[in-house]
Length: 493
Image (cartoon, rainbow, N blue to C red; front, top):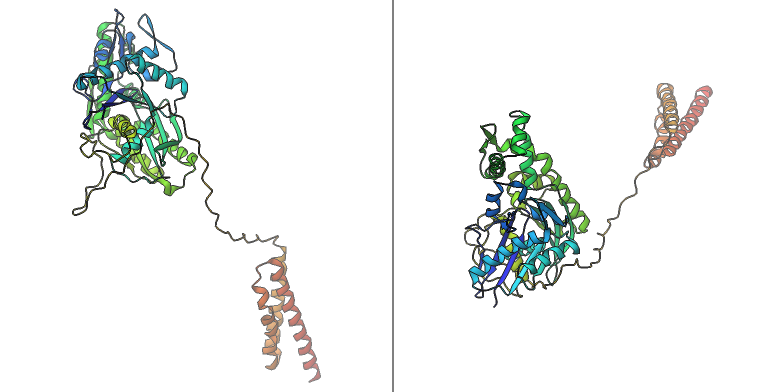
């Protein structure tokens, strides 16, 4: 077995996973961390720094710094300082760092490379990524949609049951964007049925909302100095403040309070999780609507949706899973180190058919209920191979519509109220006649007076205005007939 490398080039961070020739799987570490900041910095000498080095250099001159090059994929070029650099070159710099670290671990270049991308990316964007990977030294990188990699991890590593024909909804809330996809399992792998997203909803937008919330503290001049720095000292404060905001947001995902220092104001602020959730709820409430839309667009019935899988660093906020459960009525699966899911899933989706190796290390633990004593843990389902080729959505035929249950015709609505008034008036006349019959008539006429009522009972089962009128007319005629007979009987006697 040859070595394989899975790469998730993200908006804020890039993650990579290696499968060694002996089958062991591990995360690639960058400066001791499994997450490489996707940030780049263009130096005066033309050298492009990546990761933490780029962030550190940005404290001196933020104009040469691009924290999220993936967001600039459509821009063609980016102005960093006085240098205009192609977006593909920024991608190449990040991917070259991944290659050098993986070669340092393996001692040689990996034979197979799988590079993930958003499912909504078209051919133009995919080519930018693929050309950058080749320029970084990867000879023949295979492209894989991110939600396909996440679905592979959901089935093979977490052990969730997704039968052929069923689907998993991948909720990818990353640093720069939000994407939702419905990924259906087929006989040969996975296919993306529906995908949609929000370009201006990510961890960066949450950070900006927190900064906007703090603007009421201090005056505008102080905030102007902090957010648009001009001196080297102000640039360091600006970079450090943004990092502190991001870290405070992440701490509030684990605990209920966090402290944040605002440098220009020389003030420490106390933030709570409730404040963060109140502030970000209008932003996060947009995501469940997108998830519901892709589920409906996929055309799958509710029972075919096996689960909702949250990936992306910003999905760690507790409010994200809460809103999904509240709005859609479905609990979502959340794991611990969810930034690494796509990179590991890329290896699982690209591996040869067969069960996932049991000895694969570094599983990302899921927040699932503890196993019941005496019961064996779920066995991971075999994963089919994913062909290393540019992704194109598979053509599919729409599922047949669900059988229509026979429906009873709606009862006719009552017509104009005039027939009912006529019937009521006739019944009133009949009642007066009967009272007169019962008051002065012989006993033999009492039973006879009820005959029109008995004769009209079948008409009462027909719930139509004309039937009520006919019933009333019939009984009034009967009552008049009895009245005539009674009058004749009285006069003869």
